Amino acid sequence: SFHSSLLELLEEKGGGGEGARDEIDFASIFGSAVASTAADAENPDLTQRIGKALALRRLSRASMIAMRAAKSSSVQCRSLSSAPHSNQGHSSRKARNGLSLKAMAADDRGRLYMAESSSVLFCTSTPFINTRFCQEAQATHFSRAQMGILGSHRMKFTVHGIRVNPMNNRHVLIWGLSKACIAVTSEGMDSFERVIDLNLNLEPSECDTEYLVQCEWMPNSELIAVAVCGTRVTVFDLQIAEADSCGPAMNYLVAYDDKVIKSAALIGPLHQDDEEYQGIDAKLAIMLDTGRLYIIAILVDEDGHLEEQGEG
Image (cartoon, rainbow, N blue to C red; front, side):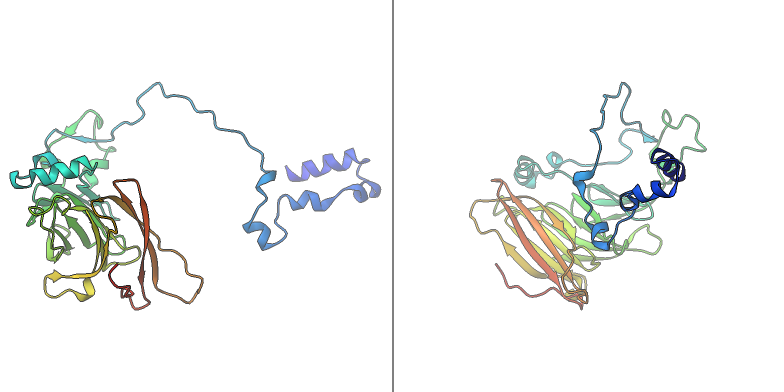
């Protein structure tokens, strides 16, 4: 198509003779297709871009169709309102802050971890995505026995959230109302072979802001976890764990009284100006219930240790 366009252009300029070639600006022809320098390739001139807005139309049919479905009550999930009686006031405070359960997670190979009250259920995802050898897959709902359950592990607390470590899928971060732990999955991926408790020292009965908002893994790390509580953020490093317990490596406190953390998100890892730097530079964005937004830095050195920043 390019050659035909070039021939047409030559014919317009005089039948393709030598004079026509002199009048043709080959730089303009090839300059639009190939960047002249590396800088032009990285910073294209967007003002020369030609396009139009997408024509969006409302779908007349269902927008989401389930591949497979399990029967009702196949998983014994638990809501915040159904927490034990002693923590009902604590749960209602979390509900008022718009917090919800994060009771399911998946690893890179498709295995599912699901919270069932005080237990974690291990499942393979094969029954959920197998539609090739199933007649009327969308209409046939399978039972709990057909879910591909690999096993389960009972925890010391009611599970509210699960996070699988992207760097090491055998490390699973689990938290509840005021307790959290890091569990190491067995080789068979059907139970936990070790559970390391994270010492948060939260006392829900003494203060209604003493609860866990969420927990996250530090980007590009399989050993550092971040626990976001009502009025503080605590960072844990498994490298300083003793036996089956790990104390906090760093604490960040909210500077304002009577202000509660509503949500948080980790940003990163961010690129350093020094190309030889092998550490981790991440930022934690914190949103308070007043709408105020804070950004704090969490740095890990080249040896995988948290850089000491004191308590602030």
